[in-house]
Image (cartoon, rainbow, N blue to C red; front, side, top):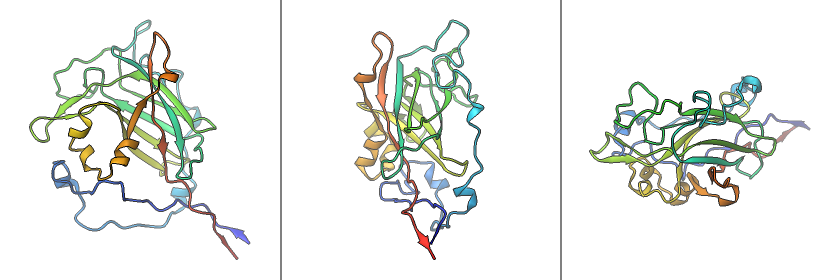
Length: 238
């Protein structure tokens, strides 16, 4: 009996938002007009190409300091975001590369096209990266981002959120998502969040306050576990 190469489990779209959601205005122009196609996994999805684990700097996982001048720190509520990267069967995904980016404490991105009037923080770049441990665990320091207005419906505001990009063991194995904070009153008001039809799926995108991992007199902690599809059940062929 010869083992077949591992392939990814099929995506369950039940909790995913529909491509066209008119209340989220951008989807009116971006949504595909035809039904999506699905292809079998090829070598590029299963085996690589891969990223180098030696590419990270010593402060890449500390957004409070990785852009700051010597002896300085980013302005804002200091937090630690931590959790586990798991597959659909709750198995740890070790060695996953996580990239994060966010607005500053005032709700403004360090981007030349961000026209929000909130000030820039000279000691905050708004991005970082890290690699999950052997047990799938990860953690990074940052400041809690602020909400910000966006030109969707006249008076819409994005909840405070952090963007995540998670790579598996190759560049084609990638998930891009967002993390929200529990108790944020903007979550149920956001047209982007409201494209998600399943309340349980929204809850999975919401980080929970974790006082056990809070550092006294330093930073509060939030837990955010990331669940990926993982590989399909093992198959054999003669």
